[in-house]
Amino acid sequence: MKISTKGRYGLTIMIELAKNFGEGPISLKSIARDKNLSEHYLEQLASPLRNAGLIKSIRGAYGGYILAKQPAEITAGDIIRVLEGPITPVEGIEEEEPAKQALWLRIRDAVKDVLDTTTLDDLKDHEDDKQQESYMFYI
Image (cartoon, rainbow, N blue to C red):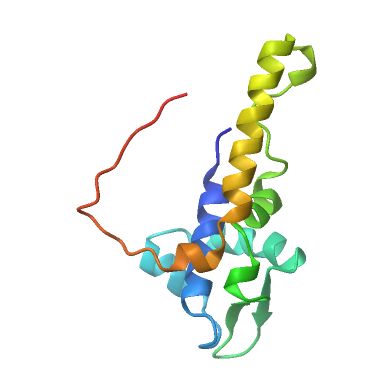
C-alpha cells in the first residue's frame, strides 16, 4: 500500500488543525507557507475532508478551517480513507493463491489497525526531532 501526496498532505492539514484546536480557524495559506506546500493543492484536499464531516470552514477575514470533532475522535484511518479510498495492499487479491491471500489480508488488517488506533491527538503531540534516527523499510 502506498500513501500518495493526497494522504500525506491531508494528514498534514489535519495535524496542524489539531495542534491549534480550540484556538480558532487556521488558513490553508498559513499551513502551506509553514510547511512549504502548494496552497492550491491543500484547497483541493480540504473539500473532501469538509464533505466527510472532518473539518468545518469558517468564512471571513479571520476565517479558515477547524476540526469538526475533538482531535481524539478523528483517526488517521478516517483521513486516509477519505483521501485515498479503501485500505488495500494488493489489487485483485481474489486471484491469488490461498497462502498469498492470507498474507495480504494480514498485512491489510495490520495497516488498518495502526491507522484506526492512531488519533490526531496522538499525532499532534509528536515533536519535530531532527536527531531522531530514521529507518527505511522496504516490503
